[in-house]
Image (cartoon, rainbow, N blue to C red; front, side, top):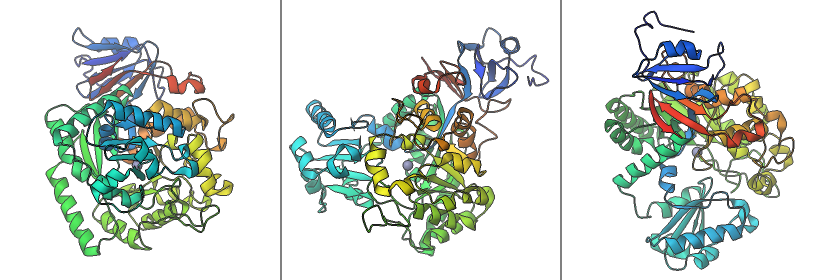
Length: 522
Ligand SMILES: [Zn+2]
């Protein structure tokens, strides 16, 4: 137990007792915080000594006391907005998709029907049609994004309203033709959406999120919530890094970003300093960039940066002390990203996001180059989308290296976990389950899909806490419950170490503390 010398006079403002502290340390069953910092972790008796009648005491009832989860990759504003829109996530069949759309349309009379979450595998051939959406929503424009946010499904009225002439299924950048012209949300609506999103995060024990892009446009919203003392969640905002700029134009963009950063000093609640680039799309729509064609086609996908363009842009950013994160899913994109990051500053902790189908030759390069693997276990949930669309697009040979988080960790690299919300639910318990079983919630397939890639639970918890903190250069502030760390704590309803793995998804958060304040209690 690590008492400070004046512990006898320092009283805890908050204590969590009667639990099991994770990572396990000298049989610690309790944690005390003073203000926004951890004061000590120890036995209940030790921690009780630090309490007085002003201390707020939370009873963990034998559950685990963890560092709050840190989601290393989210699209928090997009997801928060979608909380009030049509939700198609998890609809496995076209019948179910149609039912949800019809029901939503009947109950909502806004000028547009907007929503997200559909699985490619719900439709014959893996894509829906304009005609189908015309039939389901004949009276107004409708626009529905796939679960991965890489494909848009529009009806004819939406295409007419936005002047888009392509067919109703829009891949990647073509989506902007419609999304740019959907009636914009007001600032107040966005603030309200973020408040709702923060409530979802608090319910799931999440204390920090890392927003993967568009941060330069969101900074003002988050700052407004911080100034009003409304934040219950810490956020790191990645600014966008886009292809197609000249070296001069990229320099000017970085000048602008540097200026923005100077105006918004990083603080424990809102931080920045990272740039997000997309190297490719997704396997499902065959836009992920591959070294060899997709199964049964001549298509190689769609790399978004020319040969050396990404490397030049990354080096310019690296030289100005920006950390970089690159979305790379296909083996060609992962290789391009690793090549681009090869001649940079190791301490910058550059990252690659997703890493769904890397070449086995590139797996050891993460450790060699000091590149962090930022992965989202729920994407590898072996469901109908994976077996029906993802795997057939790649073929069995390449699919055998799908989401190889264990191989990457074994090679000595750092791994950070997250959800990619709204692509999958903001649910660390569901993520931990896939990370350690490589199974669906129903336990399929038996033994797990590519079981060699399973993490053990300690590894998965570390990737969800310390790993995320390391990926944002904040492991000296969060990710563990040591003395002096930020008091960001998740209390679970059971002992996470003892719970049968199949029951992980049912595990519930009973309390969430961020900055020493209780932001959720069941
Ligand atoms: Zn993402």
